[in-house]
Each structure stands twice: as structure tokens, then as C-alpha cells.
Amino acid sequence: MNQLKTDNVEKSTDMVENDKFLDGEMFATMVRGGAAQLRANAKEVNDLNVFPVPDGDTGDNMSMTIEGGVAALEGIHTNDLAAVTQTLSRGMLLGARGNSGVILSQFFAGMTKGFSKYKRADAVVVGEAMQEGVKQAYASVITPTEGTILTVAREAVEYAVARINESTTITDLFSDLIKEMYASLQRTPDLLAALKEANVIDSGGAGLFYIMQGFVKILKGEEIKESDSLVLVEKNSVDLSAFTADSEMVYGYCTELLLQLMNDRVDTGSFDVKIISDFLQTIGDSIVAFKTDSIVKIHVHTKTPEKVLEFCRQYGEFLTVKIENMNVQHSQAITEQPRPMKDYGTVAVAVGDGIKEMFLELGVDAVVHGGQTQNPSASDFLAAFEEVNARHIFVFPNNGNIIMAAKQAGQLYENGEVYVIESKDLGQGYAAISALNFTSDDPEQIAETLTEAMQTVTTGCISTAIRDAELNGIHIEKDDYIGFAGKTMKVSCKTMLEASQELIRVMSENEIFMITAFVGTDATAEVVEALENWMSEEYPDVEFYTVNGGQEVYPFIFTAE
Image 1 (tube, rainbow, N blue to C red):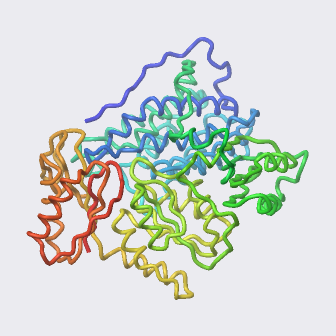
Image 2 (cartoon, rainbow, N blue to C red; image 1 turned 90 degrees about the vertical axis):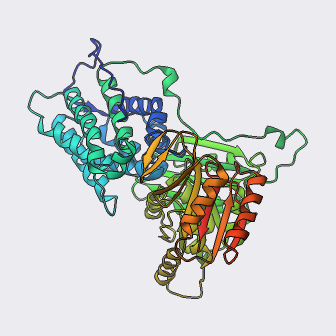
Image 3 (spheres, rainbow, N blue to C red; image 1 turned 180 degrees about the vertical axis):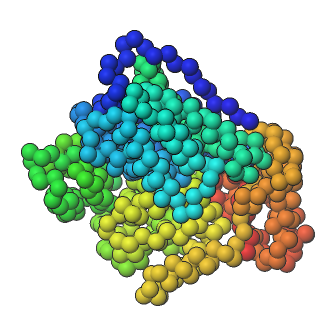
């Protein structure tokens, strides 16, 4: 069974004097420490994957989620616990990625409610806030599953709160919390059969453990190294040669910022964000502008970003600002005028240029980059919703780990109704998108029809094993080519071609008439040709199509109808 690192940290003599109360400044420091501790162990959390394939991303998703909160805290200078937690929560909600990241953001959102009336809090109040966090985390999942991050959070909070007495310090409380969190993690395989079979503990719970372990390190006075506190950001390769001294500015700048409204300039409670969005319409497009409490999130494509900054400073100060030249972002394209609002729009998630192009050809309005190991954030979805500009927007996440982030973005979006079609893989999304038909004037009926269309397809994937394993009665050795359908391991072979053939045989046990093979970057032309020839001989009555998907991790993704 995988074991986590349990550092023994002695209390420092220069520890904060009054450990009976938690204030905003200390909590912000703890959060930074928790983010750094998770970041240092993100790969370990990623590797706690039920399937032994290189697509584990829980550690990265949770890390980027809490880093979203850390980034928001950079512009906050207050010792007020309520104000700090509100800012942290907003940043995490917008930055949430993957199911574990969304649950994490909801846990901290619940804690924020618990701290809403407190400038500082003792152990009792902190315990009550964490209980509120557990409650909200459970409420964020339609069907909560025990043996996951939810269980680890609940059992640890219950244990720590039960031990509170009048002498309990904040350090005592969080020390008790991580003690039980570690114990709860070791029990997760007994609650979830998939974990036991894979011989791993729950990855989301492990991510939460490392965050709270970082909290305790800070409380006990351990210094967080500067090299450990670099913000985790997505690495995008930028072709600087795309814009030279002789280039013409065609696309403008992608301008994003978080604006903290200031009480000495506006009534922050009643401020109408339409004032900003109306102005942005005059100088740009692809506009996102929405207000959460006293912070406004802004995204716009414009040739004059300086005008955005000048206008917005009438109402507040910037927490974060990002301005990027879109001429060097050659994969992005913008329209010269904002799209007029229409009745229906669609957003799909895809990774791989071929898959993105196919979705656009099928009528999808906006494609959000993402998939396994590259989960988009709630903020990414919000930008896409604004770009589509429709009264009713249908979203195809195409990955079970992206559904919750899409739904969270839908709850935050205010300019239209969002319907998340819960496509859990590429095949389901492909089938649903192929069934798009907006002749009905009932969006609920459209959503139901799209959901029904997903039931006609089965998806199978080929990948490589990163460790030895025994799953579903199949012996797997490291570097084998493995094939699985849905969440069930089906085959393990020594070659890519053999694994593909065996997986297709399994998928063909049910009556099918067509298979589409999305070819990834790791599949060679020779293997593709050999597979096509084999299909024509073995299954002459089954239509077999190949699409250059361009996806990573999976050399082949098969959809069978």
C-alpha cells in the first residue's frame, strides 16, 4: 500500500505567541504553506491512480486549485480572517480543476461561511468552520462516495473536533486533524473496492492531507523554502518569432485581471458590473465580466489594454493582471466583432488538434482545451461561455473528471442558462455532439435528447502501463500496452497492435456496426495501416474509420456504435 510522508515537525521557539486564535494573516501564511507542501508532493499524488496509466492528474488539479486561491491572496493586506477566507475561496472557485479540485474549493467555501463573522477564531470556531466545509463538500457531489477525499475530510474533522477542550490550541487542532487524516487514508481501500484492487489509497484524500500537513508545518514554525513556493502555472510554449520588429498587431492582447472594488470609490455592494462590460464592448470582444462579492473578474481581447486598466482603476485596484500578445498565441483566433446573442450555443472540451477540428466541423461553437492530465478550470469555462454568447449553452466535458468544474462554472455564469451534458469520455461526447439539433424550443428536451444519444456508444482506450498491477483478473507488467473500456481493464499485451486488436475483440462482443479510431501522437503509420488491414479481414461488416486526433497519453481511442 502506498505510504505518505509524515514529517515530524518540532514546535519552533519563535512560533506565534498566541496560538489560541487564528487570524487572517496567519491563515494566509498557512494556505501558502499548504500549497507549497502539496506542490512538492504533487507527482506522488498523481501516481495514486487506479489504472496504471500515465494520466494521473489529481495532484496537479488540486495544486492549481489552491494556487488560484494563493494568487488571489497576493493583493490582500488585512488581518481579518473573514476577509482573507472570502478572497481565498473566490480564487479557488474560479481556479478549480478536476473533481478533487472542485471538492477542495467547496470545502474551503464552506469554511469561509463558518468564518464569515470572525476577524479571528479560536479552536472551537475553527472546528465549526471545518465542519461547515465538510458539509458543503458533500453537498457538491450528487452521489457522495465513501473512501474518497470526502471521507478523509469528514473523519479527520470529526476526530479533531471531538478532542477540542478549553486548552486546545490552533496547532493542537490541526495536529489532531492530520493524525486522523493519515489514518483515514489508510482505510480508504477498505471502503472502495477499486482502490483495494489497485493497491493504492485515495489520491484526493492524499492531496488534502499534504495541504493540511503544510498548515501544521507553518503553525509549528518550519520555514517554507523560497524555492518551494513558486506558483504552479501551466507551461505554454511561446513562439517569440511570431512577432518581430516588422510584424503588424492583428489580434491584439488577451487581457485578464481581478479587480478589487474599493469602498472609497464605489458602493461595492450595489456596484453594477455592466458598467465595465458595456465599456469593454467598445474596445474589444471575447468579454467576461462578472462580480463575486467585491471582486470583479475581467477577460477581454483588445488592441488597447491600457484603456482597460485606466477605466477599471476608477473603481478599484488590481489583484492580478495578465496581458498576452495574441499574435504569438498562434493557436488562438478571435473575431473582430462580438458574437450577437443567439438562442443556443455549444462548448466542448477536447485535447488534440484533430479532435478539436472535428468538433468545430460538427457545429460546436467553442472548444475548451483540456482532457486527461490537462483539466480546464471553472474560469476557462466562463471565458468560453462568454465567447459563445447564447441564452442556452450546452456543455460537453468529455471526461468524468471535468464535469464538476463545468457545473461549477455554470453556477457562476449569469448571462445565460448552462446545461452540462455529462459526457464522461470522448465517445459519449462525439455521439451527443453528432446528435445536435436545435429545432426544438425546449432546451430541457434538447438536453435530454443529447443525454440519450450518449447511451449508444462504448469507448475504449489504449495506453502504456507505468507499474505492475493486477486489475479485473488481468496481470499487467510495467510498459505493457493495456486496453480498457469505461472504468474496466480489459487487456494487457506486449505490443500496441496486439492490445488494440484484443480490445476491439472485447468491444465487439456486443453487436456493433461502426468503430471510429482516434489516432494519437504515439501511434505510428505502420500500426494504423496494420490495424486497418486486420479490421477488414476480421470484421468486414463493421465500418472502420480513423481520425487523426492528435491526442497524447492514448495512442488509440476507439468509439464503437
